Image 1 (tube, rainbow, N blue to C red):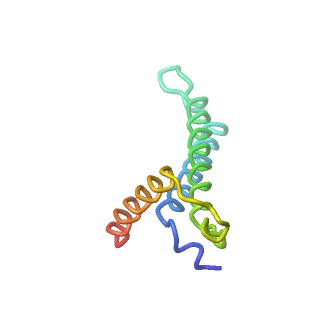
Image 2: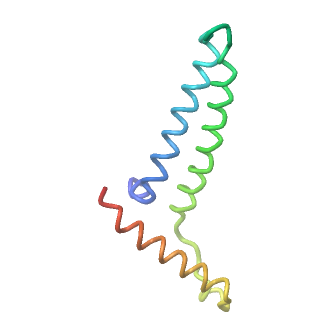
Image 3: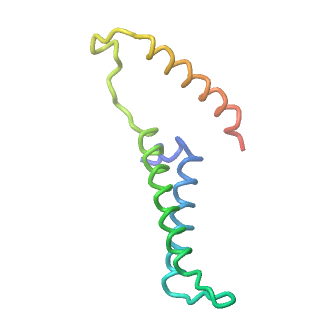
Length: 105
């Protein structure tokens, strides 16, 4: 169970941080009266919080999809490779190499 958290750590941290900042921003915008020189900034905080939470959803989708196991490979299903498959595989390998170089941070 804990092995699922070891993959895509950076995306998990991103999603959690965006959730925390978004909820905090929304709560401050709703419950605190923030006026500077007669202008109310509560709406700005609420909208910013909603945007951060929306961004975190993308992070959660990426983290979840990066932790999916047990998918059948195309060879097992009799699938034939195409040019798009080769391009996707090449990009994936490049991204994986650059990520492994920075994973010791």
